[in-house]
Length: 82
Image (tube, rainbow, N blue to C red):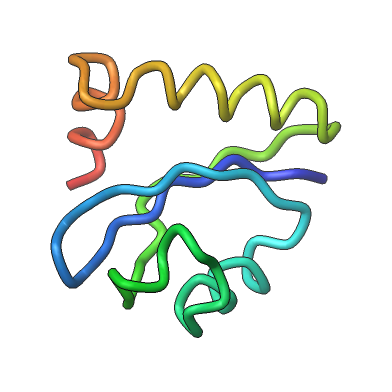
């Protein structure tokens, strides 16, 4: 099982989109400043995740969600959660 996830920084409200095979471990890595892209904006919380069967599906979905970032589709996606 693979996951596409959206994190929200509790420091500045920014979002990060990624994929992983272990959601808990990945969130822990982000929050322990183990990720170069998120280390200055910790802590993070998961605001959305989706389960997919293969890494390829997760990678494709991650790219799809990233293409929404900043647009209306992304705002609808995260807006329904907040």
